Length: 358
Image (cartoon, rainbow, N blue to C red; front, side, top):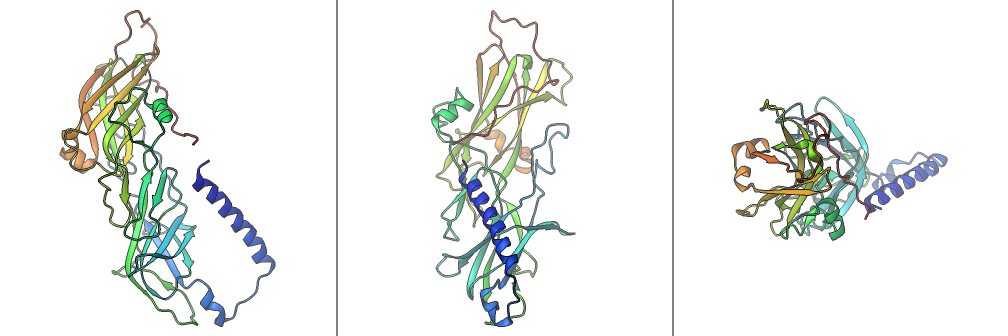
């Protein structure tokens, strides 16, 4: 079972039990007790304008990626000099106003100088490491085991050794050079704001790309997946920089539909949206995408394209669209009965389920 999910379940149980005992013995605490209570108020807004998720679609008629607003936020205060974690808390109070969606709450932080880092803690796939250092904390996704990789992509090449799950959208906010100097007795907690005097905004450190190519003979396909190499396997959360020595390949399912640019009935389009920490620099001659089609005849057909140049086009840089101007033809076996099958763009082929029990 996912360790983060276990932690969340135990956390919620503790909150429920804690609420029972608090309500059973409520009392008014005098002012002199407030040095032990929450002395800091944090509110973080989330910029949910995500290209290819909430806007900037290549084709509005195509299936959109699923997205829901975060419901939990981890807030961490690191000592400004030692860089070490001093205080942290998980906040759940969500809301929305004219500025947008936010998560807020109170926490206790000792007097001192700090850098604050906050991020949504309810992702499904993302893990973090180096959690106790402000400048080295990073996000990553786990690699598939050999058996799991073979289940999803049976014909992967030798270069695709570190096949990772797609990262969720991870929203990160930071405020630096915070000076906390509360007296022992105080009337209200301090509010954390950035140097412009406003609440901080969390931005996603993950990109969503849209990929598309044309396909002939879609009626022969039962399912289709893609594997793209040359991606970053992790990212520094403080600097938003990719960790360049962590090279990964990412797999994802393909959808099928009609091509808006073509009128031929026998040409369909295969497409997908996929998430990544980014394309690593200096991957000239390395950035490949491999498509695997499992046919209704229990055969497998693979096609590989080098797409380094496509990633450098204005369409890819500005819009995060990877449009491969090729037609892949699915070839049925010579003895196959091709009288049946599905018409292009009418019925989706099967999706290989992405949930894996580890």
